[in-house]
Image 1 (cartoon, rainbow over the protein chains, first blue to last red):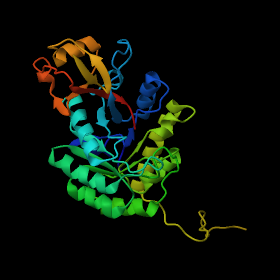
Image 2: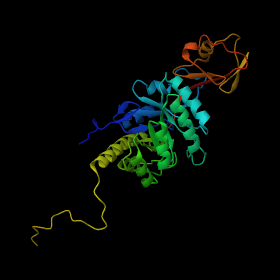
Image 3: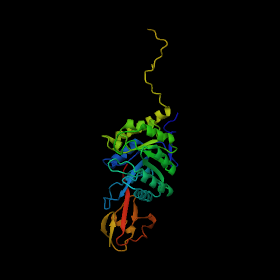
Image 4: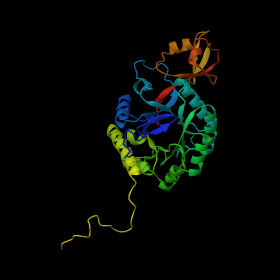
Length: 263
Length: 65
């Protein structure tokens, strides 16, 4: 039986025990960010790359002081990029910022209302980044054909959305996610759209290797408690997937034996 | 001389290097720097002189999903 300590997944040559990847946006303050991450037991943590606040108070905590690259795998994202060029430039800056660390989360968005990925720009950026030596984890739609193409380009992980970023709607197309998982030979991580613990469990029961989330934890009334709930949901969903669920039936099937009844 | 630093006009002394700019800006923690869209490696901060009109971007990691 697989246990938490032996059931690992691997990304760019590093193996991870936690299948919950979390974002660091939208928290009230850096203390809440720190506590939520600790409670989630996540090992991979996303960050955004933005202009430095020049002239800031030097006593103000820098995010990477709290979420140390020595302790966590920092996953810089290209959030807010709407074309391949901007995303590539962001990844290059991130690699310099993180002293040569080459694992990045590529997302090229198409539309502010839906934040859906621009798949053609994503494919273009992925090709260039892979050629430039990046380990690319790529955010994409739940289209199994595109997911496979991104894998073939050389992305180290394909990350289909469950639903639009920040929507909290949960997995909208279980058939597509299942097909993506079946076809894949790289880790499939559902990225975006989960709202609560059961959504994360469903993604894991479909066979995904992990779930990346931010808003579901950060916008919970109690983010620190939700971080713990998500950790458990991911573990439960994973174990249920490995255990193999019972078949669904249209009618009842008695659990107590028919033989030996005395009435 | 004047430069554009993170999108804003800024006056600095002539002959300033990237290293001088970092010190004057009080930057802490990890950051990356572009001058006119070229990334400047950390090893070249001291030797890279800033020219009038340079467009400089200094970025860092912040909270994001």
